[in-house]
Amino acid sequence: MIVQTFSLDDLLNGDEEGVPDPLADYRKLSYREQLEDLQRKHHDRERELVSQITDLLEDSLHSKPDPRIRHFLDDFTDAGEALLTHFDKEEQIVFPLMYI
Image (tube, helix red, strand yellow):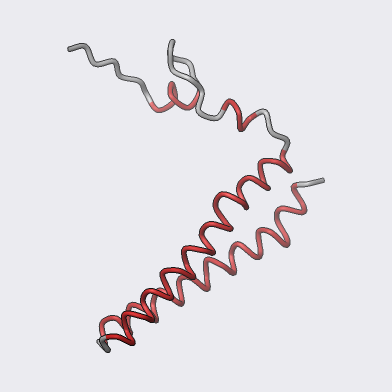
């Protein structure tokens, strides 16, 4: 069995013969399209996941009260709020500056 290896740079740049550039289609997009794609695929999805995980933790806590779950829920809520605040700042401040 022959195993062909590639460096990370080769994979990212598509330099190695037969290795497609994973960012080729993405590089064809305008900055606006890239930012919209980022928001749609990552920000919107992460918002959904934070909400879903919070709901699951709350359901779990209600069905079987446990201080460990309460502690985890509190920590997760803090982290989720920080992440969502970060997304809001990017979308309201950073992204509009990049559209110029």
